[in-house]
Image 1 (cartoon, rainbow, N blue to C red):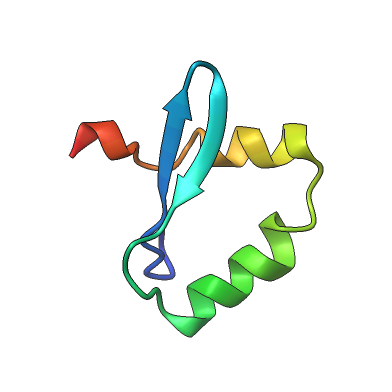
Image 2 (image 1 turned 180 degrees about the vertical axis):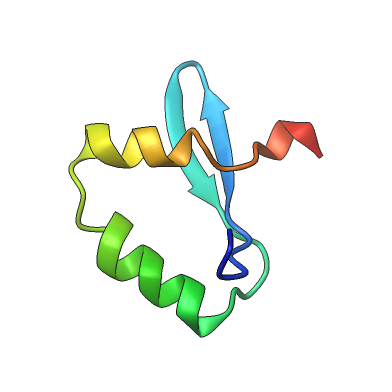
Length: 57
């Protein structure tokens, strides 16, 4: 989020995913792809749960 990322968490029946409707800055996208993308499912879920939720908007 500090890099200008605009991803939001989608939690539905304990399944967690992310949504991104807007282009995010290249630095934020690169960080996600390099650092978060390669994580295993459990680690990535922990990170995604810290994102703002789409239901909070």
